Image (cartoon, rainbow, N blue to C red; front, side, top):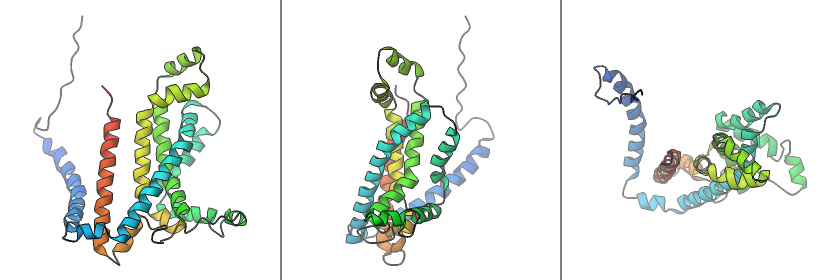
Length: 271
């Protein structure tokens, strides 16, 4: 019987050429760390709490939390069936559909905002039709949600699609053999087994929606308490109140760190 050989585990001290890997790695890490450290250092002034709890900051924070939560909920409800369909069904032009879904991820935010405006604006392609129904989207809180869904929902669909695709097909086939219908298989087999991927995708979607700026300001505008989210308030803070901008930036960074830590935890394989 042959003995299994373990692959050697390399440490940072192995070899004489470690610096070839360390030097560029540390350079990039320092490049990432310095701006974030500077942001935290500049924000921790005596007026940090006053700025973080100012009326403008609280309005922007509450609006961002509310709209990003709605965006995530809509993405889950509509995106989960779509992700299941894409991971299990084969049909013509499926690759083009996946390309369409992934496109908002790589589009510049300004392009996304302009696309929403020419589609659903008051003079947009569908704006006149919506106006006849008494619906006006631009410069409303609903426009913020629309912009966030457009740029962040594809992240959920992508994560859910990959999660469903990695589930053992034999488990699904066994459920069908036992007499389960397609809805029962989806609800009682696929959802529980793909829960970690779905949760990870939902967190990424929420984080992306929370930080959305470009599409929002073009399509929804900047109305305090109505469409002024945290990123927009941070942008305007450069001209009006730098302290509020710094405080909101740190709050947004802390929330993002927490969500990324949860995502990393979900990505770890269970024991």
